Image 1 (cartoon, helix red, strand yellow):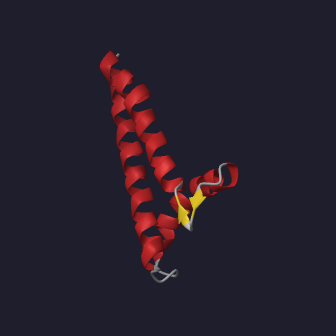
Image 2: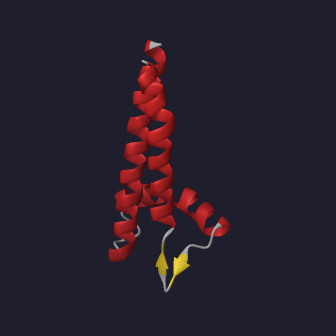
Length: 91
């Protein structure tokens, strides 16, 4: 039981960190930073595959505004609130 609680806490931290990566990558896309900056490349490489998958499967663009980061954050929060929190309650 202790292991399940620990795994739940680790997954919660990973999901939270990935949500922040999505938020930062989205903000970076608004300001158009130097694409050769290593920090910018890390954020884009971590976020682009999942966002690109969502964009191909579900077109979430309305009047030039891309809502795929919002959908991804909502999905990750739902995952966190349901599965991970249930795992942590078992502990």
